[in-house]
Image 1 (cartoon, helix red, strand yellow):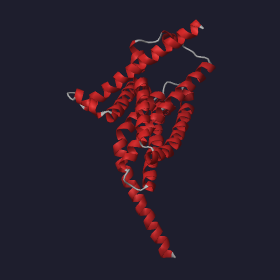
Image 2: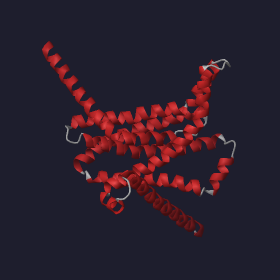
Image 3: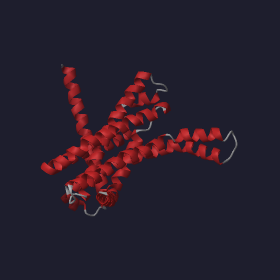
Image 4: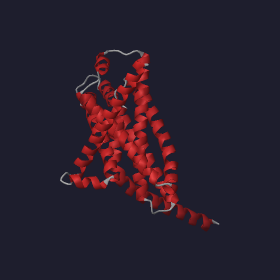
Length: 293
């Protein structure tokens, strides 16, 4: 009896070793997009009232967990029965990411008239703050869903020749890292200033290491957020361009003089701009029809 239990424990230990080894390989394959995921989500989780940062981040994290619970079983089922649908989902997701990235760049150079008015408001009502939060949370969860699909499919591709049980465990580990790891780091970033204030308070006004570190954290946060906004936008275009380049590899032959990363960025940006103009045209048509009626 005892020998049977020990044999079972040996099998479990060996399985866990295999899962750890395969998870390490999958993590390396998804490292790039996990970095993009971090930049995008840190940018989306910032810009809230200080007291609302953690509640908003928790709402996005819960949405991310729900995304994974939906994506994981659906991905395994689609891969087993109708694998071609995965490519369509990736392309649609890529279009959304390209649109988001290109729209931010377009808005920077050609800001919407109402955007300027909102930016000049020094105070917002509680209802306006809650509406703003709700919109940003929804946008963050949708973007997380698309990035999660990409991460999970890439991770699955590294273990596609393994047994189903191994696939489920390895991909689940990567999905957990993509949520807990990414949003844990995001939480640290958006609370940098609070940590800085605490260090300044503990220094009791003395110009010591605590005071200097606290001051550095407080002053660094706005620059970090600005940097993440830029990096997050670029990451959206890189991820979308990477999806398109992978799905349509023949197109790279027409621009083989460009490095791969430049081609992917331009691909994502051009497709994104096309999507922006199509959406703008659609909104104008709908607005014109509503005026006529």
